[in-house]
Length: 111
Length: 120
Image (cartoon, rainbow over all chains, first blue to last red):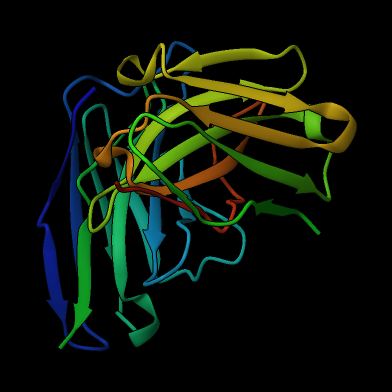
């Protein structure tokens, strides 16, 4: 499954919203009713960290300014008000089918 | 608390092998799959494969089949990734991460990464 993210880079003023799109080449809806789409943030020099699981569920400790939405093959990660701590590369990932695949990543910078 | 601690950086020559370890603590080792990802310099994330400590099941990405072996030792809660026939394009940071055996596939804890450099 090919995952395509847009844009590949984003420069955002603190306090402004940001949005990242992720499209999959096949539906990520599994027969169990779950959609296996995840969002990760890799801050500079760090390992990736889980933000959102199964499209729209925020992982423990993730601020509520992060939200995920979508279905089937089209998904979106939104940051309602970007903060300086949000800089890094955001990846979507699918686990609907092996091999698991990632989007190319979206680099978020602060203006 | 959950920790996944990987072995240190390696410098290898082309054609050599490397074995990276990932020691897990703070949870029941056999309750989670161990996935390995890699990230070439300045590039994105790539899935290598998984090892399931409960029954030693493995699955590898097609591009690594025949060169990679994922194993584990449940007595010391440690997983291993061995990559053979190293090439310059295997230069990357290799990460281990856990995935619950039941439920979704949220990768909630990651190792710190192990840099493998392949150079003559």
